[in-house]
Length: 148
Image (cartoon, rainbow, N blue to C red; front, side, top):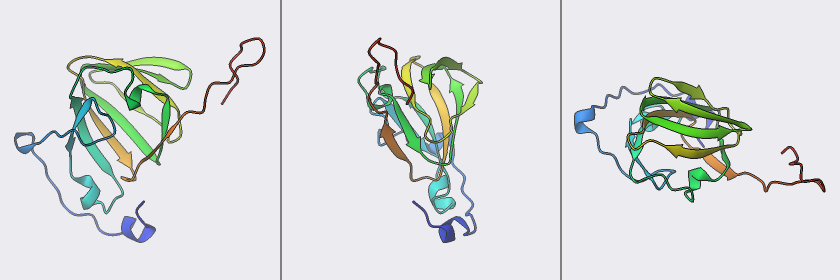
């Protein structure tokens, strides 16, 4: 995680172009490919931003299909193309092209599916993001799920 001194450093100018973009599979999700927008170095680790596309079809066994939360201060997603269906807390949402959401750090969520043409912009602060899996679901004797 960046230090406070690093976060206070002046930012550097950076510009990226789609024509020069490389999408690589190095990222959180094994079914995704990422275009790094080069903000991590320019902000001394304060911000990470990338465009995500499908690298493979949705896989319900992939890491993002397991309920998890991220350890960060800011997590913003803007859908550029297609759609993504998620469970955030106890609510299921489908976010489609032109829609956006802010996901507070520590909020558990699960990816339930997405379109073949999914493309999204993801911005996170700081750039050093941790991920934790949700604790196991606990039910009482009557089968009611306890709050986490």
